[in-house]
Length: 252
Ligand SMILES: Nc1ncnc2c1ncn2[C@@H]1O[C@H](COP(=O)(O)OP(=O)(O)O)[C@@H](O)[C@H]1O
Ligand SMILES: [Mg+2]
Image 1 (cartoon, protein in one colour):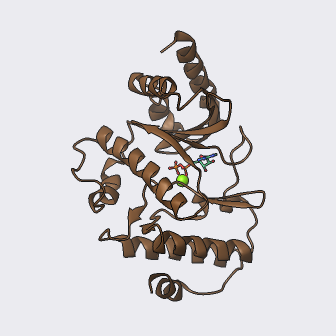
Image 2 (image 1 turned 90 degrees about the vertical axis):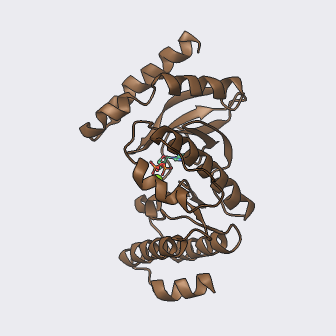
């Protein structure tokens, strides 16, 4: 990697420390740009899947999302998974039952690479079914590159942070239904934090956990997803149908 790029990533890294809320996250955060990740960024640049990386948009326990740009200057979101994350065990269940992925990964790095590939494929499947998701651009190792939703460098508002109305309710269950029926997928981590509302556009995202409907736990995940959304909308005063009737309708 050019030393200029490396310097820049390390500067982003330093600056983003000020954004941290949780000091427990400190250690793993400092390890985001380990040597292997720097090389992976470089590989994406040499493949022309990525042009530049700027600052952090948002950071969670397992991944950090950066604002970047394509080689034509189009804004991109770059999600980098922490290879040091201890979420390996939890992740396995969402991989094991999925017939798209044959051999199980034997260590946590491999599991993360597979997770990223799965997230990319899930975004493609959802998009082919006509669902609004960030367009997947590329993936390599622990890095997923996708369309930037909203106006960079700000983080787009999730349903949790905006007002929601009946149209959002209808869109949500319509989307869950289309995902199930057409894409043959269950999101499996659906909540108000994984739905975006930007201007009048609504976007489903964070699809790494999504499983095929043939997964042995697919029904259980669907029930949890639907339950989360029914509960969220009820808190916001929007009640139409309960979880049971939604499940009946979605799976019939
Ligand atoms: N495509 C995107 N465009 C813009 N911001 C994004 C995009 N994807 C993720 N983000 C930002 O990063 C945050 C975390 O992304 P998410 O995929 O939910 O990661 P996690 O697996 O950590 O929950 C989002 O809430 C949003 O602020
Ligand atoms: Mg999320």
